[in-house]
Length: 244
Image (cartoon, rainbow, N blue to C red; front, side, top):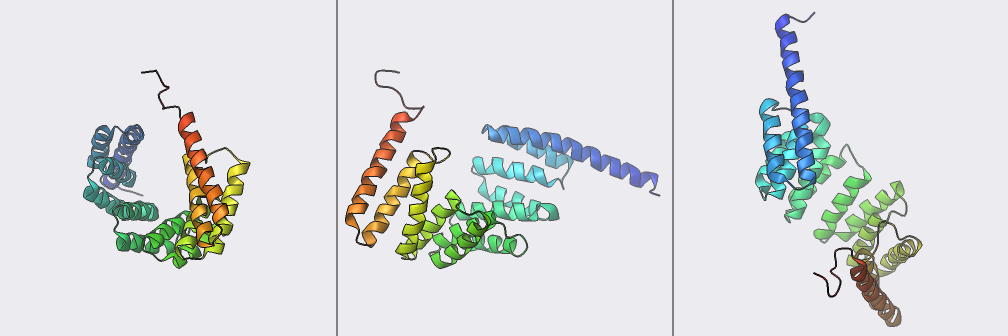
């Protein structure tokens, strides 16, 4: 049976974690609406009351990134990574920040560490992006092909693999992926409309050029231009002519 002192310690810890959880939820809400200063205040309060409450470090890292405090954000994620249940998620976020900073070796180290015990399709895609940025497209293709076994015909993964194939100068394979993307584009208008799709046709046009299929390249370039123009015309934020 626990002593009275031990019971009091557990109660205080649980109370502190409950308070930290509420403050972290507020911080997450502020982060969602880009009120980063308020998010920072709430997460600071949460950490002051419960220094081992890992979710608060995630919230503070997000706020600090938005405020340009990247070094401090990386430090917060390193602290969160010390809590075993949050280890992989913290390393994934830290790897993403390193990637955005162009620190590809550090990003890859974190991605590789995650892969030793948590080889999800999301982690494979992250590592593939890093490999592509490091001009190692063959390694990116390997990761993305494995990810597609988990999520066959996934639009975003196919996009990444098509780019990696093109970078590796495997143009026939790249064309096969771009053809599948174009087919998915034509079947559905949900989730991948407008400018995003314009890039698919523009990139396929480049592949056609490398394969010497200039008429098909010209047709894709025209479609890319048309898709981008239509997306701009239909954008809800565009001011109509003659309006203020």
